[in-house]
Every structure is written in structure tokens, then in C-alpha cells.
Image 1 (cartoon, rainbow, N blue to C red):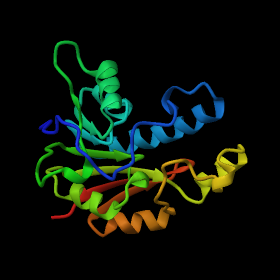
Image 2: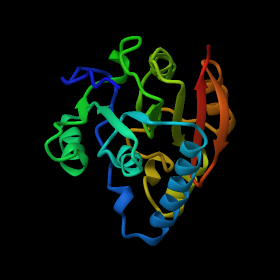
Image 3: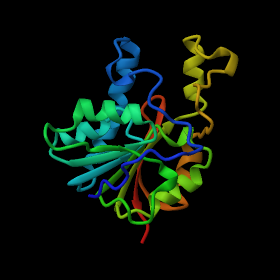
Amino acid sequence: MEHALTQGLASSQPRGGNLYDKYHSRNPIARMLMRGFLASFDRLCAAVPIGSAFEVGCGEGELAARLMRRGVRVGGIDIDAATVAEANRRHAPAGAGPIFHAGNIYDLQPGQIRADLLICCEVLEHVADPELALARLAAQQAPFLLLSVPNEPLWRMLNMARLAYLKDWGNTPGHIQHWSRAGFVRMVGRLFDVRAVETPIPWTVVLASRRA
């Protein structure tokens, strides 16, 4: 697995880490929802043989680290250099050097990433051109892909139920793309073979394989 991107790259991709650390929230409802998401993530990862994984849009590295604890070799990129530094601080093995790097999904070159599984979770709702982003992922040397996005309109409805982002009808800041389960699966299916779909509230999680 190659960790080829080592420099920050300018982009129209408006993603820079999480609005809050949802993986370690103390809110009981948030914790319950994250348990559902992580259970889906674990099941779908276990459905295919993986010895290596690379996360595009790794944030603080929580998902990659979840696999690393199971013996999977991991790496990743994120557009925000400060977030990448935090991911390495939390999860890079001592003395091994950084395993996460600053980089941009749009700037991935064909075959640049070699891994059994590509992960791209909570990213595509932030990008201006999700079809181009998916095309960049499809051009990598990885047989399997795991994606997640908010399941709309459920995501916004739940935000409004907790009186969040009311002036934007529950839309989380930075979310510029919105998909229902069917709409997202249809988009992914244009470039990949969809193998499994799970809908832990309020997400859509898709496991796909690279099309020959």
C-alpha cells in the first residue's frame, strides 16, 4: 500500500475534519447512533478479505485505526493538514513515521493507492463534484470500496428534531450534496458493483467492488 500524498493540495473540496468528535461524544443519543454506524462498518468490512485499507478523507483517523487494531495495514489522506497531524498523533505507531498525509481526493492519480479496501466515509456530501470524486476512487488499485453519506432527508429531520440548524432546514454546515438511500446507491452503481447496503440511522453505508 503506497502512502504517496505527502503535501497539502489546493482544492474546492470543503472538508476539514469533523464539526465535533462524534466518535467520543458523551451524548447518549449520539453514542447510540454511532454504535449503529460502527456496527455496519464492522459487518461490511468483515464481508470481504482485507489485509490493507486506505481511507480517503480520514479525518482524525478513527475508522482506519479501528481496522489497524485488527491487524489491517492502514493509511489515509485528508485535505486538512491540522486534522492529519491529529490523526497521526492519535494513531501512528511509535517510530513508524506518519501513516496519514495531507491530500485531496480530486488529485489522486490512477493507480496511486494500492490497498484491499478503500474507505471514503462522510466525505462525498462535502465535495462539489461527487461523480469526479468517485471516478478518482474507481481508478485506484483497490478491489473493494466502503462509502457512507448522510441518509436524506432523515439526517436533516433529526437535526431539526434537536433544534439544530433550523434556519437551514436542518442541513449540517458544509453538506452541499444530499442523497436518499436509493439515489446514492444508484450513483455508486454507475462506476462500481454494489455488494451490500446498510442504513444505520441516519446514514447510508455501501460496500462495493471495483468493476473489471
